[in-house]
Image (cartoon, rainbow, N blue to C red):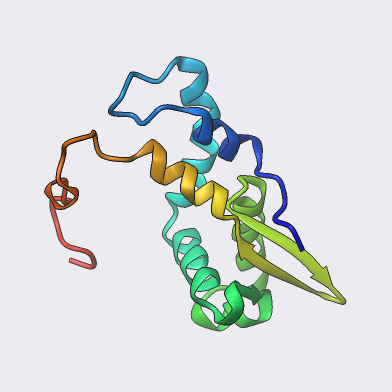
Length: 132
């Protein structure tokens, strides 16, 4: 099945030059915010990671719930936010929804946040280590 078209926020991020290349226009910044907000929540970021790392690159809601100490409606809400932002695609199969990561959306975020040309990839490290 071909990937679903990206949501407006993902398309906006894909159309923007990297943040380091030129300043974002107010309109571009507004268009990209929903995508970045969707990824800024720790539960949603983990959901994206779990879906991407799941066997076959897709996961059912029923497979994701056990990774969290949250009610199923809360997990479904977070998945809906990610789907609306264009980060995940959703396919209904019977009573369950199956999710896949939308590669274009993650590529758009990566492109938006890419380091300036000539900068070594490892030189822009966060202030603290992952999980620190």
